[in-house]
Image (cartoon, rainbow, N blue to C red; front, top):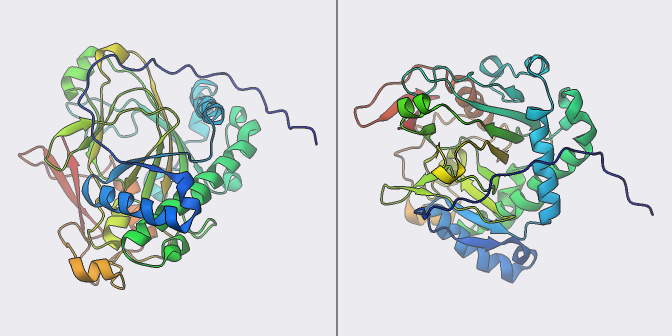
Length: 368
C-alpha cells in the first residue's frame, strides 16, 4: 500500500539550547513504554504518585511519537502564527470572555488587564483546537494539516493522558480505569490542543515587568501535557518556595497537575505554581513556540474529593485550596469561569505579590 504524501509545511527553526548554567528543578522521569504491562504500571505508579504529591511536575519519555514526528508537529504548530495574516486571525479569534472557551485564537494584548505589571500588554498568541477538529472552521493555511492534527490530539488523549491517569489512579489505590472513565475521548469533555507562541519584548517592557512574561499560576484542568522545547522560560515553584527552571529534554513531555485533579484527589496531588519568564541572555530575541494538550475531566464531573480512595481516607482531605464542601462546581462550570475571567477580572492586590480572587467559591491566586 503506497504511503500517503504529507502536505508541505514550512520548517520551524527552534532556538539553540541555552548556554547558561541554570538552576533546574529535579524532576522525575517516567518511561511510558513500561505502561503496557501491569508490572510496569505498578512501578511507574509509585514514581508518578510521589512526583505529583510533591513537585506536581514530571517528565515522560517513549510516548509514541518519534523525533521526526514531533518536529513536524512543531512545524505545523507555527503555521497559524507565521502563515496567517492578522486580518484573517481576527476572523478566527475566540469569543473567550462570553463562552469560557479558548477555541480559536487568543490574540496578543487580549490580557491587557492581566496580571502583567505597569501597563505592559501581553505578547502571547495561541491557537486552540478542540478534540473534534471540525467543530469550528480554521484558517486556510491550517486546513491541509487537520488530519494530522486530529491524529495527534487522539494520540495525546488516548496514548498519553490515559496511561498517565491510570498511574495516578493507582497512586490513589483506586481501579486503574477510574480516571480514564471520567476522561472520555468524545464530546463529553472540553480538552483541547494549544499551539502557543511567546514573542520577544522590548527592554523597557522587560524592566517594567521584572522579566516576567506570565505570572505564577496553577492550571485549571486535570493534567497538562507540554511537548518539551528548547527555549528556557518555564519555571516552577519548588516545595521550598524557590523558582527553578524546567530543563528541556529532547522529544520528552513535561507533565503537570491542574486544579481539577488536586480537588478530586483531596489535595493529595498538587497543582504546582509555575510561570514563564524572559529567557536567559543566550536565547534572548528568539520566540518561544509551544505545543500543549490541556486535559479536562468530563463536563459533568463534580470537583470534589474521591472519598472512595483508600489514600484519601487515610491521608484526609486538605481543604486549603479546595472548593467549599457541598458547593463544588462541575468541571464545565469551573473551566468556563476560570477562562472567561482570566486577564479580565478584578483581583485583590496582595502585599506579598500574590493577587487573589474568588471564582465559583474557590480561591484563585496569581503570583508575582
